[in-house]
Image (cartoon, rainbow, N blue to C red; front, side):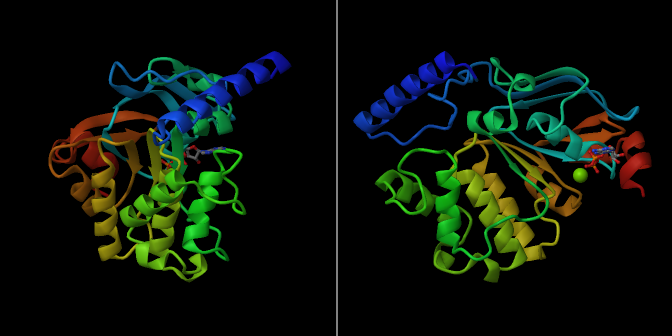
Length: 291
Ligand code: ADP
Ligand code: MG
């Protein structure tokens, strides 16, 4: 970045922080605001727009002209056999992998293919990887505190005092992830499922517009899986969620017979519709469900 850009970003950020302090409002979703990043625009109701994304690894096409639209506040499940390109798709959205061709927009104004990985997270896209990655030696509360600190506000470091607004947000997240009673527990002592929730909570602390969750219930007990479905359903509307999952019972719980499912196969969308519709689709049965 040029010094002018950085200065302009710092100025915009200072005025934004001042505005926040003046109004006492809770920080809105877009963490990128005031950082010199483009302003997201969701007026058209679209959170994520992928158009003909193609990714090759040494000539092998992991994604072939993949197109997908996720609405603001939508909860979408993505299913598909191993190797279908589900994780690669998330890598493209988050800037980890650069596609060879295609478009990826966040809202109508943010071209994700022009942003770095940290910038993509700052504009409001959070990602949960398959394995939980919490700080095992810290408490649940401290983990959430650290997650807030990654938005790099001057006051938001582990060793400084939290603002009332931040404390409120941590409290809210602790309730959402059912860990209010475990706030002082060491994260390493939590069950596998609780660690997954804590990591989801760390993403939620940053109030992302779009949350990407890659096989979030892998290794969870039935009860934990059910609670996770409840959690995601409670987030619908406030965030857009893209959930990649193999567990059909979980997908059924999440879609409740009324939400759309997308089936990926060989790097493209094979089918899209209600779970009952895609389950009745002959091609889907052949490549995936029938096996
Ligand atoms: P899924 O998550 O649906 O199981 P992936 O997106 O992980 O599928 O993988 C899609 C295909 O791309 C697979 O055949 C996989 O082996 C391949 N692939 C993924 N990442 C790489 C990489 N970094 N280098 C080479 N091949 C890769
Ligand atoms: Mg995967």
